[in-house]
Image (cartoon, rainbow, N blue to C red):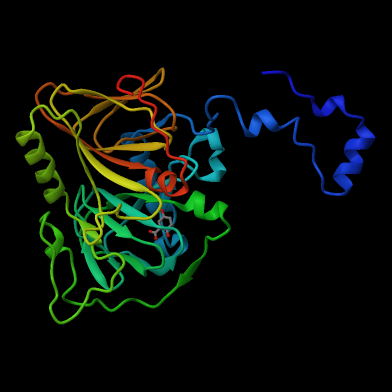
Length: 349
Ligand code: GTQ
């Protein structure tokens, strides 16, 4: 690969003439925008300790009333992108949100898709498109693009959840905006009940479900049971993982980001294939060591970390006697839809 001409190699007045006409020479920047062999991600492997951030989040509860915050969130920002960009990766936003007893986060809808993974506390709920979704630890609740959502809390302890949004991508597309709305009327008769058993679907005889997002709440008890059944039934299975899907289509639950739950057997170490999408790991139960290229993070319950794409990742259960359960978010649907998804498994081809 030959050296290309630099900007400094050109006469300054020539560069000035170009600039005056909004023109830029490609060759000084060609290698930066098309680096050899693989991308040079800004996304840095980064971990956020829940124990470290929790007191600061609770402090935000004292410092800023919900009316002044609308959403009381500390953003898990990747220093490789610059903290002010509020990005975990190119397409993933992460935030820890606090709702205190009796508080109300008013109804709005926006173009980015969101999900919430409940971290602690009981008694809070999100109302999405008229469906009241109770929050318990480990539950996944979807707020897909364009659907009204608001958060309330009838319990007596703080509730915290992890927000995952495709906000960085939608913002980059100059397609990000929100609309405020009135308090929603809760519609009875909806809910995930009909969808929580795999293999059978509710079959309305007199009406058709017109909902693009038929399942909004994925209870942890069900997901955990599915993982344990899978592990018990297939003792040789290396990766005990399920994908959160739209039960009507079988496709990923949302359009841009993918969501998964993974069980690490006691003592298990799992090396993931090297693939193009960036990933986020959040510990629902147990503890895990996450090795990203030459960095290692020791994660306890409720800790979160991210890894850039095109990078080797190894997960290890820290316990030799108990399983460990991880929530994973990644950019697979985005990469697949855009045709840039790559799988570079050196071990298995
Ligand atoms: O709860 O609706 O972390 O609108 C960022 C933007 C949460 C929310 C975030 C949001 C929300």
